[in-house]
Amino acid sequence: MAPHLRAHVPRIDSAAPGVLEFGAPNFSVISKESIGLRSQPTDLRLLEDGRVLVVADRQLAFGDGIRWTVYEAALSETSARGRKVAIEDGEIYQAVEGGFGRVVFGEDGYWRLEQVADWLGVKGFDHPIPLYCETAGENWFWHNRSGSLLGWRLGEGVESYGGVYDSIAEVFTLGENIYVSDASRKELIEITRGPQGEVKDETAVWRSVFVTSSLSLESGEFLLGTNKAGLFRFDGEKMAPFEEVGRIAEKYRISGLARISEDYIAAAMEGYGVVFFDLEGKRIQSLGATLDHRLSRVSAIGGASFGTVWGIVPEGIFRVEMPSRFTRFEPLIGRGFTASQLYRHNGDLLISADDIILRGQYDDEKRLTGFKTESLPAGALRGIWAKHETLAYGMENGGYIWRGKKWERFAAGKSFPMIIEETRKGEWLFRSENEIGWLRDVGGVLETTMYPVEGFGHFYSGRSVGPDEVWLELGTG
Image (tube, rainbow, N blue to C red; front, side, top):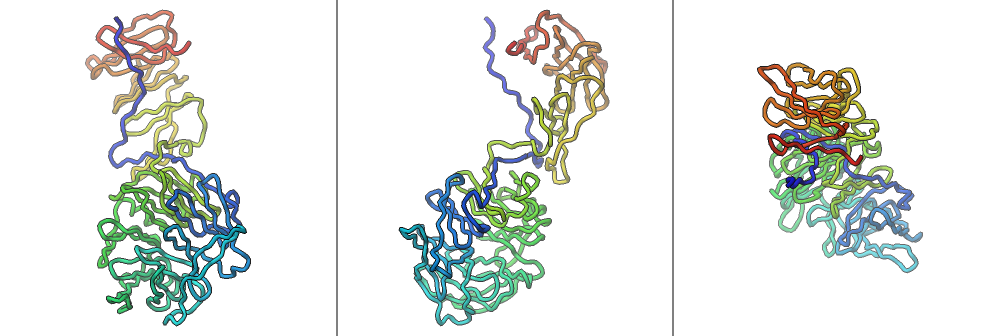
């Protein structure tokens, strides 16, 4: 009785530790026009019900990436100009003239602001409506990029923190202290608060580099993104470089950081795109601007919902699957094929397609950056076999095998001889048109033994199931 054979799916060895072989994940860029917005989005928030909120001047859009509902601010709402909003218990909050308001949706399809707090009499506040709200832990901080910094959350009083800032780039809290990054002065300013939340002291704890983004870690530290200085861990006293992905970050401005799962973090890097990495800094996946020029200016990452990461670009918003179930190498290849197959040789990724061989090219960080066409012996190519240092080509006039030193020819004159598998060290099973045979290393010299299998033509592959039995795949013809 013939042995039971299971369906065989071709496999290749995994990349060596530290080698990064990712292509393009599943992603899409959604233009503001397709959402129904007139202005560039300035804020994106993931809601508890799974929907996405996009803020664009006087418009609020709710949707799932395909279907969107856009609400306009009522004409009477002259102060409805918030760039970044606060959200609590499903309610949206913005600053209004003289205070803070809750967004209320009317039956007429417009939204209005219902004032719930005021800042009248707050010492040290210069009174323009703060357009930006930074959510930092349990705190809401309101500002206009420059000028004063206000603290207010629903049910709490309004406080003014620190002095007058030239260009607020980021605000976060660590313990009882508030940290404000001033981009113009290139300082990270620590505001020390007393037991009642009052300001006790204001000190620049880091100079010459300005922080552009922050993310709280379980360790109690903060991960800080900078302007072309890399990523750092900060515990309130000292800065420590965040290795691995931090070296990439030294080349770019980190415009956003977001925790997208228990294990992964996303960093938006202006000029590059988005990089996904684990808590140790190892890159898992990236979404580069080479795939879509609009990704070169990611201004924010809104977080992740149901395996999809959302962010903002000048032209609209984007979403990317993370972790992506598929990675696409087409952008790294730059050409189309009728059919292709992946192999690995000496650790490099190989693609056999349409009579050519492409070898993966890697940068100094062991990241796959593209593919280069390999030089082949003269003649048409039918197949390729690769394992460790050994590489074999099946050509129209014979086979060629590379064992780490030089090309050696075998089965000269045979039609497309192709190695099927290595049965033991120095011994290979191969096939050609209407023939099957063994290729053996005998004292450093290659010898072939051929057996006719008339009528089989160019079969595709095979497997040995014993010393005297081979099963062949003939295809559907």
